[in-house]
Image (cartoon, rainbow over all chains, first blue to last red; front, side, top):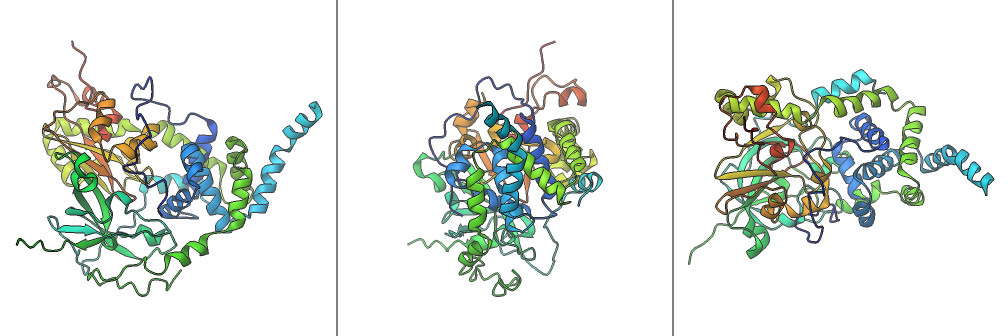
Length: 112
Length: 121
Length: 237
């Protein structure tokens, strides 16, 4: 696939080494990164191959690929595969996500 | 569903698509000159644009592995030889490449053609 | 998918056939779902922590994943597997020429001898840096990396600046890491792939003759095993 993931030789992306870099960094910076990385590890092999996973990530829209954090790209890739392979439906996931967020939405509405 | 013990076992063991098949002889050997194909599949490939249609040299035969292009669309069976192929930076980037330096990348049979014999006039 | 590649003769190395031809449009449309696209787009701006949580919960409810397996994986890659593994391999190679020769010739066996093996490191290649040749590793297409010896990759390794620049102008990238090589040094960039993973064996620093393996391992930084830096120098006594 000819998309932005195939980036070798592109110009304009700037510096590699972050400011203040000392050669180390935490493995995960946020709890959601831990859970996403682990979700990938426990579903790959059982439900999709690594090549299918890479393809799913590459199919992100270029703007999304370039602007979302690495493990968020994994979220898109895994969520897409689970839906395209029929393990969950888009409708079902959308409903589950909305239900999980409903209490805070109610509180916000009540505060208004 | 994989249990914690299952998944730790899988991660500790790993999984490779590599197979041994003495009946299949690699098409290329170290030192062979090759040219990469120009391909633009709509699906996954491990042949990046920067090294399509370029001249390189095989430096290592890695063995028989799944072809990622077809494995990404569900074909778990196909195996091809994978080779480390080296390109001069000048071949990839023209005069902006460093003459001292090279790039080596792992490429499969489907990406490679034997280099045409160069005829000196 | 079976039967799609019947025209691909496995024994034919005549280079005349190619598995892409004619089929990739069909394949792309078969896997592509507009409903999935629409859902993903509609929720793309909901905070990622909520989207990850919902995915874990729904897959758990469906019996597809076991939350305790997730906890075990996090512990493995956060606390157990990391560049300290690779540093032990390099320290042994520096201390023992026979081991080093084994590592370069049969890296899987030599690395497994120290107890390291597993996912994303099944097929290893060790690259020796010398005074004349400097090796550096990237994965331009995704983030392939030798997990059993180095753990999960650092952010910069997965970043667009590194992936775009190292294959074209490695000297400027190395300089950013403080690694300035003589113009005569041959830089070999390795764009690693899904199957084969690379470990750089950095040069042993000067002044380390009397050090034991544990002290040597402390000088082997993660970045030196990717090839963007040299190994650390010992503190003056």
